[in-house]
Length: 138
Image (tube, rainbow, N blue to C red; front, side, top):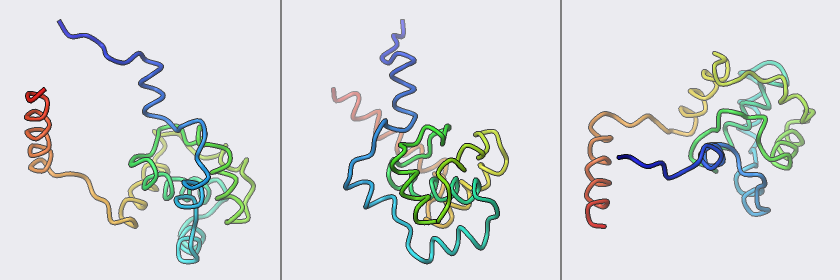
């Protein structure tokens, strides 16, 4: 009989933003160079879209994924990005949810900009076999 390892609250904590971002991570991951700022402004309109896009651009390398609720991002990270873009941090509240087509398209653009791609079926099979072998070892 299968057993649950994580509670719903623990699972939500693992799939969302941490409550805070450390000072070193803040300066390492939430920094936009001139090229990134130009990309955000020239290809996207509206403060909410620009800040949401920038947050996704910085979150992906930091966490390895983008949580569903961008408004749950640590306030200091949002403020740092907003300051670099000369935007009001409150603009993020106007950014669409996960089902929003704009947000999904922005994530695709961020993945392409960072050179990330989805794993192929073959790569997922290799990973599955590797993880299964490690699990059987223990």
